[in-house]
Image 1 (tube, rainbow, N blue to C red):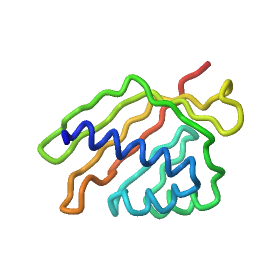
Image 2 (spheres, one colour):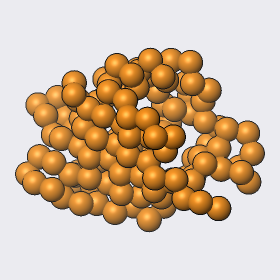
Image 3 (cartoon, helix red, strand yellow):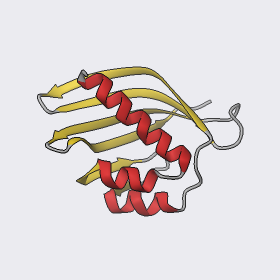
Length: 122
């Protein structure tokens, strides 16, 4: 499997975990030890902060990813950039953002090092 397919599968697995309420476990095991998430609300969290915030976060009801772009940044580093729509109750009133996820390949597989959300205004 090519790196693009592996990372897209991993990214979707993260979204599926957020929809099933398993986001804390997923990101706790997928993020690098020094990984960061920069969120649309202006907060930047380390891995422990991400896990803590997701323990009580309400699950998403659904999501859609579009315009996915793959950026190889080195032999063992790559990023995905995409547009995401996610909703909790009303699919007609989604959270929309431009997202980027930068992954590092380790002996255990790909690990999320940096994730960023930039909201898309209505």
